Image (cartoon, helix red, strand yellow):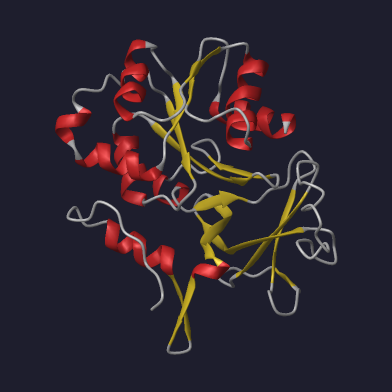
Amino acid sequence: WMATSSHQVSELDLGADDRILCPFPLVNMAGIGGMLFPWLETRSTLILHQPLDLPTFLGQIGSEKITYTVAPPPLLNMLLRNEALLSTVDLSSVRVITSGSAPLDPWMVEGWEAMGIEICNAFGSNEGIGMLSTRATVPSPTNRARLFPIPSENGMEGRLADMETDETITEAGVVGELRFSGPTVFSGYVGSDGSEFDNQGALRTGDLFEYADTEDGRLLRFVDRAKDIVIRGGMNVSAAEVETLISSSEAIAECAVIGY
């Protein structure tokens, strides 16, 4: 994970003067790879926060002069839409906020960008997957909300595969499962028959992506978790895509789409 951490440090331009607020327990990859290792590498300042308490967390951002932290999408959405609450939070020191665990809304990334704060889109898991979409690699805020650079550094490799044939997908606009390999990927689940890996030894993530050719180059667009795809009238409908459309309304605080 040190290689992934170094990539993050470089992409976000983290240095000794940064002050990192960590809202994670230091027992998972978000806390270890995303916060602990960058702190060790940059010799910066690390402030711990656990368990998450919103008033304390927001207060620490101002009192500790935080320059970099992590926040879930619903919190970033809520703050942008709650001007009264946002006005009480001192964000003057913040340069970058990483978010993830769910698809980001383009309007949210654009909104924080307009305030001078970069939203970094992170995609990863404890199994050893790590992708970052930053201003350095994906300048467009709209693209950064859903698209990621294709992993190809530090021995990491991501490819798209047809879930039925296992054939590698190379053309844009064709949905396939992300298969991931490299030094950070774990060796398997305890007691598993190895079915979490394909015949090339790559981890079957269960996450669906497609290639997109954009002004920022060829990128990976997140479509949905394979199990969250809703089949309706013979069409594959992405629950995440419908959720994005619904949540763009200011009348909606949070939403979830399921098949029924």
